[in-house]
Figure (cartoon, helix red, strand yellow):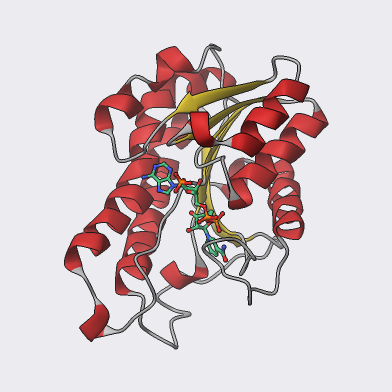
Length: 228
Ligand SMILES: NC(=O)c1ccc[n+]([C@@H]2O[C@H](COP(=O)([O-])OP(=O)(O)OC[C@H]3O[C@@H](n4cnc5c(N)ncnc54)[C@H](OP(=O)(O)O)[C@@H]3O)[C@@H](O)[C@H]2O)c1
């Protein structure tokens, strides 16, 4: 498969990249600063041409629009919109509106920019789009509040996923959103219960099982549907 993964230099994105390379797939791995992405570069040296590093900030509209020329394949079977950011988990008094807007730009608009740019290649492959969302973007599940910028951005991403699913299903592209669990990464923190390898393995198994009837659904990486 030809796979595009955003935010691939660390955390879940890096682990997904490592596993798909090990499986024999070709990965176009994006990072804001690929020249500083030591682990991706080391992986690339072993991947015999199957790992291509691309500089991409998903908030940069021009860079996203230029992505098709950087992803040098006519067909993309899988796009994982993994890049994400959090402005923190505080309450109303801690909320900083500027950083909340940054969350929205990266987490909600970023994936939409990337899908729009790669639409032709995804349609050519009848591919899949996986938007890495969060259970913190579930309104029905919200019992602890706080984290305004991050939660609101992931709610918006969930809505965008359903929109994309509706618009792209007639073109053969399946779009879903996936919560990876609470994962031990820079974002999840050291107290998170799920090792990054376990989460990435679950995400890959789930993606393998996605069919046309999955379009527009919100899944836990373990495979169960989650409430909006
Ligand atoms: N960890 C969890 O418990 C958890 C739970 C639910 C959902 N998620 C979601 O899972 C995804 C991956 O999370 P993670 O835990 O692996 O986070 P992470 O370790 O903090 O890594 C985040 C990645 O996103 C990239 N990124 C941030 N802003 C970007 C931008 N504007 N343009 C391009 N790349 C950008 C980062 O690049 P830089 O290195 O350049 O900053 C980094 O590669 C995120 O969407 C997150 O919201 C994580």
